[in-house]
Length: 447
Ligand code: PLP
Image (tube, rainbow, N blue to C red):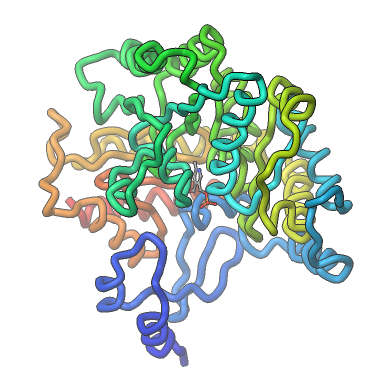
């Protein structure tokens, strides 16, 4: 009936997967996903799996959207490829740039297209340094980021990120990037109120700027909610204080909205929800609902003015910057979001519903905390609810729970013992109920 064994063998013989222990996968064999519709995946054995992660936080409008397929087909027939280098353009890039200027916050009016979130972060690193050099301050080079941040897997992206496992391989981070602590209250702020903890973590930025010297610091970068680090939702006091500090010292604020953008948190962009005004915003994933690779750096008026009037040629770009087919899919995707009022739905109805149902898991004997915003959420697996003590690392509680989920028909991700969900924004209330029930069953089996 199925080719599963054959695919697994060929996969093991010829394929090195991303973020994977190669030997472990070869021994076990990968699960082969062959199709998907709505919020459900189908594997090569015919199992139906609720995709609680929207792929990799990206299939926001769900699988099987004919509008996106049609947009891609039409564009492939019309103009499958052309580049944007050397003073050329094409209608999908022009139209998407205009649409992005419309849907992003008012001061973000220019876009630099890339092929991915990582490429966005490589771009902002070069762009902010070039910005300061163009203003006659070439020593303003340092970008301040956070431990446990995720900004992609290219050399600059992984250096901006604060993942120790990534830094341990390949000699990262590159020079000129420093990290401060993350606003992870459950993991690192016990004993302090969330408010005080948020302020304390934000003020590390000020301390770092003063320690390095304002004349050396170019920018601060952060995900409004750290995604891959464990859906770390900062206390309310955090982002306003970060904004205050950036304004006080005139350093640029970069919001990496690769996960948070395009409705995930119940706002078009999470920066709006947190009340911050980033100079640069990195977008990818949800921009095409993952149907094609695409990224975009939104550039604020303050930065764009200097780059345009004083920057000369910007020696940076990718063959697939603003790929016409990806642009056409992004336009169709954004129009679909608009016509289905998807952001309002996440904000007003399905987001609050998921958060209410998800928070019920807090009564589970091995859950220390649940948290979330819009359609992204996490829970912390603990051995002792009184002290929030973790299971010993050897227990692999998070991975065990993830396996139970997968085998029972739910994709839920584990970051250590933090379990994460980020389902498609089109999920229904019944499907949320199914998700929460499957998660509870997996927690029962893990306990
Ligand atoms: N930035 C953030 C916040 C991300 O979550 C990711 C990917 O998960 C990236 C950047 C990298 O994006 P990509 O994998 O498209 O390069």
